[in-house]
Image (cartoon, rainbow, N blue to C red; front, side):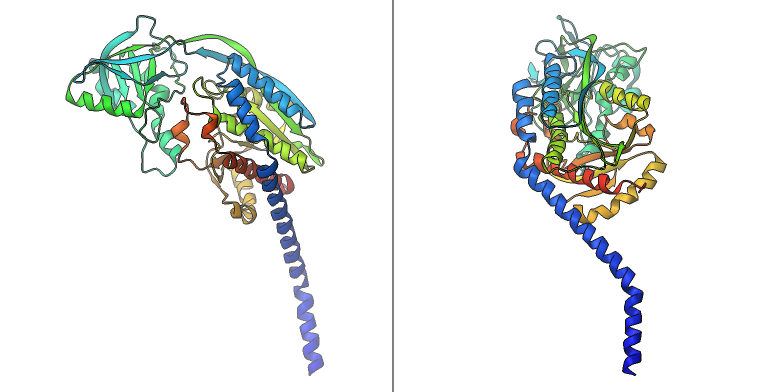
Length: 471
């Protein structure tokens, strides 16, 4: 009886042995991944170079609007830094960029109101035409949407300055969602107002709170419509102007001297570590090297550029030999044209390059929260589920993977079947700095910046090791 029981137990053991082996193998792989991801974080936090690189980019070079001498200096500096890392290739990819200049100090002044004369804190919007030296004056009409403007029509808009005053939706926990709900007034307000005969536009700054810092940003003129000058005013001044308009008519004087010059040659900066097994499969990571011409472009997007560079530095430091090619791309001209992103996608298509994925860091250097994934439907359905098992080793670092937007510079790759991934840091403070004079080096926390480098390096390691729905 005992012998029969022993044989039966042995048979059960043999039947479950393959499962035990698979579990042990899976557990071993998970432990290996956890160990290496820990190494990536240790290296980023103790031997990272993103913070000193950012200091040079912001303090020694400064604001880097496309077409400016500072943008050219940033190209050369980052090329040289990548060239010191012992990468397999470093090169410059040509692109032609717009060259918009702000001119001297903008003036936006209330010249008739219950308070008398009041200076408003303002910045001309990028790509805007200027008013000319004489400036313009007009009565102000306030709206909160393009639809509200259309309802007013030419009778109430012609000859006036339109004031777009839609605030961020404070109930949106994701401030980028709130930004998306308000930004069309900045992007298209000037052309829509010109359609009804307006002579100028003021826009409430794209900020999540009330402060005195005006936020610039790009506008888009629609073909066939007059180009009228546009400026953003701080959220505090937007509140003031709105209160005054509720009491009595308000008249404003605007003077800006901005202008669009001829396009200029520029470059994307690219460096890569070639894959040892699948070199033709590319995992790209990057940010945009240009910034607006105010502040220092620290969060937007110096942070994303130096993080992307530091990922390659850390892989080389740890002597990691990737299966696939890991490429850093510093894009030029995200802010007012997307010429660098378009040039990169065009060249990838021309060369028949296969990008497994592209990651963009363009949401500031704040504490990592995870990654947003986007792709064409078939690509998303195939690849997104393949990323879910990685949450086990990413969650200890507070990282999640969810559906969302990938990033402006990598968006032209979408039609080539590329999985687009946006690095997502905490969003609550980003729009305190975005496109302002206070987006400076001192606003970036060293540890938060380094943790972002480690987070993206961890995801790249997992993609490189396991692939995405192909292996």
